[in-house]
Length: 161
Length: 116
Ligand code: HEM
Image (tube, rainbow over all chains, first blue to last red):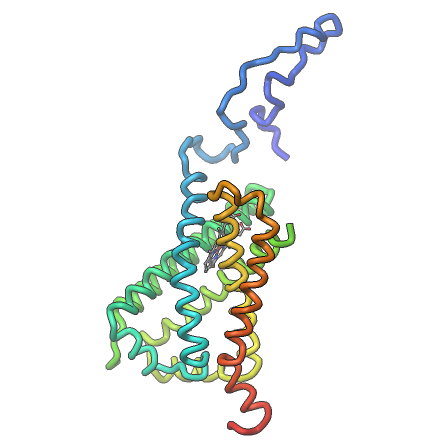
């Protein structure tokens, strides 16, 4: 519930209120600017972020089909699941630059895709501004942490540790 | 509507799995023994069942995601959205059938005695 003046009905729907002028309701040409319903504490930015996020969800999704399903197929079907996993398995996998690149790309695309997806979900359900800001702060912090940790591990992996 | 709910739920599920997966794999950078000990705790029928659930969630999310892309970008996509959902479910069943035995083979051995 915000009392922000900018959330009032669009001006073309606002009647002047006087009975004698009831037919005088103003109609304005349609505008492309979206109604402003923002958290008033955040600076007013006009970017295409939402469009790029939408596009990224779809493009990364297509790439992830290959990367994630390939990964699952190899792990679960070819290698029989977690049963076969241990340190030497990982060492064997990451001795190849091909698999290092594969895993790095998969990590970044999945993590950013999942973070943008959860951001949408938080925006949908967390209606209080404070709740929403805190949830997103938590989301972004944990995502940056996970990305950096995962990247570091792939780049600095040492089979002879 | 329900495909959207399922897409959302599976997306969140996979996200939290990914978080845990990066954390436990990061142990390879700390200590091979610690890594092996943690992974060994996953080698039981219950975690295997969760793996099957994960694969089911990923397969649904992936192909329903492809369906969303087709609805958004292919000009006949919206018209065939219902048929596309059936296609997603059909592909899901076929792939699950292919995945299940290889990934649970060991568990059957453990549960019914031929493997320790
Ligand atoms: C395997 C290939 C994948 C494909 C094709 C795919 C596709 C998509 C698409 C197209 C959307 C946007 C839906 C919309 O805007 O209505 C989406 C949403 C989402 N995806 Fe994925 N995705 C994949 C993998 C993943 C992975 C690995 C994760 C987790 C790390 C993930 C988490 C999410 C989340 C949380 C959402 C938001 C759901 C929502 O807004 O309701 N996805 N996915």
